[in-house]
Image 1 (cartoon, protein in one colour):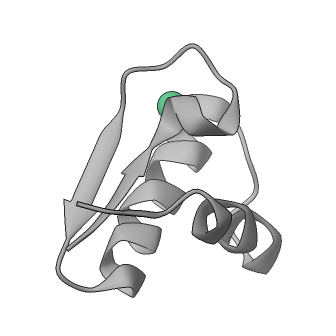
Image 2 (cartoon, protein in one colour; image 1 turned 90 degrees about the horizontal axis):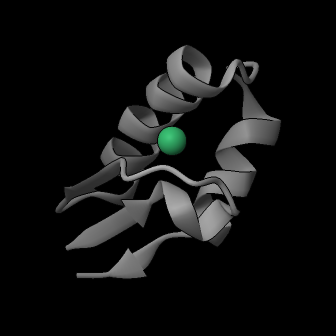
Length: 56
Ligand SMILES: [Zn+2]
């Protein structure tokens, strides 16, 4: 199980997402980053998200 916590990217945000599949978490997190933090969807954002994934 992979988990993403938005606060691990340095923002004061309680969002977290988890799923069995890393790409699924990345997709959920990317959507969140785009809608909540005005970030571009794309490889740059995904790469950033991947660095913050943890085992849950
Ligand atoms: Zn967030």
